[in-house]
Length: 420
Ligand code: TRP
Image 1 (cartoon, rainbow, N blue to C red):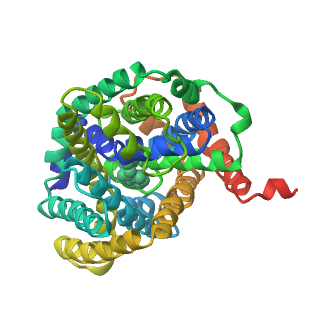
Image 2: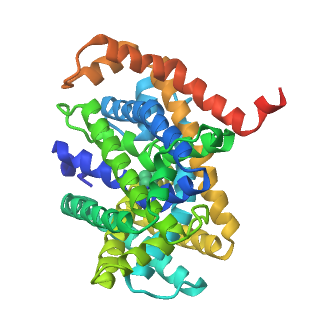
Image 3: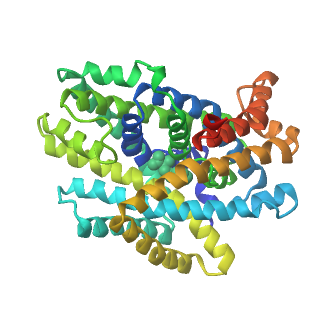
């Protein structure tokens, strides 16, 4: 494959990680989650989760991959000297299959909006299938990095469009209610399911807990700083989510929509806001085209996990694995279209359970199974931050606080504390 050759510049890994992180999670899932979970209360906990859980796990994933120089299968074996951590790659594989079953459906909705086509079972299958097909073809020819390089231009353009939307949205009368909904924290709305959802959303949006970033870490040049790469990716991803919230909620309130309406929220609101501008149709097309591309760079990173796993386990070639996966994933995607509860179940299963369990395992591995000094050296390498206390806080988080927090959030979500 010569894949490492594609990544021999520092910007390569940042673009790949940002391409994976920025996607439907920011524009589609974040707003409807905020809407369903009480607005500002969710946002506050979400931000806390990104900073105190997502960021350290991202750093941990990059550092495992960079140190081992190989992807998830080999990395745990190389660094621990045994194969007791193998189940983690199976977990990542299952998560990637579930993600790849519903994510293309939503990508299909975006493409439907590009061409202003009706949304029915048939068109969902055709355009969901098309999203999956395009992803597989790009991976087949190994030209992912071409798309990622394009995102250097497309991402800023996308941000400009979001700013335009925000401007329009804020000018509508009644928009201040939306801003309040987003930023005026109402602590009484915080409950166990809001916390579980916020944690899940932070894993999903940052692409952590599945080994994607671990694999990207293995492509990092020695001289690349793990800390600054992670901070850049988390900052960009969070910024885009907040911009998306600011574009949507003022309009939701001004136009009298229900913020808790669910997964269709952005698809109902955004075309309406663009419709109020001159050249509305052009903006709508441009916006959903860019969003579809962002979704495809995310899909590519998920597919990589499945392809690597299948080709490792079955000795099939990379291309045959892609073919096999396409058939399996297309079938499973059709099931998600036919049975919406399956769509929701996959989505919740991945965000709320599989990714946090993966993240938990990663923190335990880095915190307790590899020498602290090794990880410390890896993180300090080419980092602008050299003071020890920073790294001590990181270890405090990785060893105790994050594992404990994840377990507590799980138990709390299951209602264990209410019954005590
Ligand atoms: N982060 C992406 C988004 O926000 C989704 C995604 C891509 C992902 N790769 C992942 C989520 C790996 C979890 C794991 O749309």
